[in-house]
Image 1: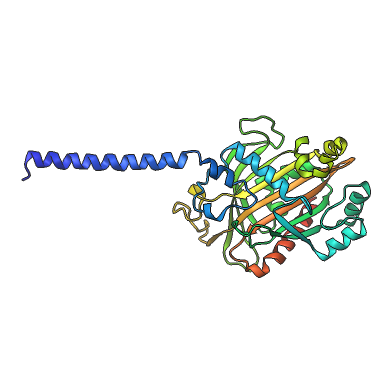
Image 2: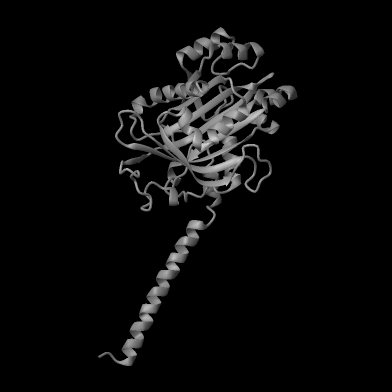
Length: 344
């Protein structure tokens, strides 16, 4: 039998180990809930996520309205064309270049006259550009960035609410198996001065099943939508702002910005053991990433129920070879517009 001293020593050791384990668990939880560093909060809003920080993100960078706001500004800047965009070099598709030449625009700069809007609307054309990242250092820099501009015969608010409504994704995305709101920070695209700033913000999980693919594609993304402000025109219409065209600036502000970006790390990370990489039916889930998604929805001047939609998409899909990524992106951009237009 052990002596009283030995028994006491063993008990003290067990208590000590238990306390250490409890303290460790608390520390881990505190770290997981802590606000990310200023470096991470700033990095997550850049046009390209830094490769060197991909393993450092906590998954909570977009839990703060200042990050959401900065991402919206970044997104608007990424829609700009030649002479105003230091991040992307755009190259128009053949039909796009022909349309621009025919209607008096140059390079990849779209027009803003009544005649321009009428031509784009009546033709129902989808202008498409494929972009290359100027920087080669960011995560996904080798992947194409796709931009499109089109006229949709719906109001900007209708489209903003449609894009943010997870219950309606299947209406315009035939490959979607459904999108769920995983964490909602604030609702209402018209919200002004809420506890989470302006607009609606949330984390969503989207599952899609492309044809001839055995796996299910999973996206975990932060989404944000808010009304455009007159001050946004300093970013969206730099020429008008420089020339002091307040009428153009005010009219162009009638619309919304919808921006999205993948969430990685922490509870949202694909490598998190708590995330079961299989669907409810046992099918394999393959994590894809929306590195950046932008939709700028501006009312056509004088026609509030028509929208000039400018979209930018930068997506990483491990199932699509790099050599096929551009064609897949261009097709996806055009199909998205056509599916929206086909809504009843």
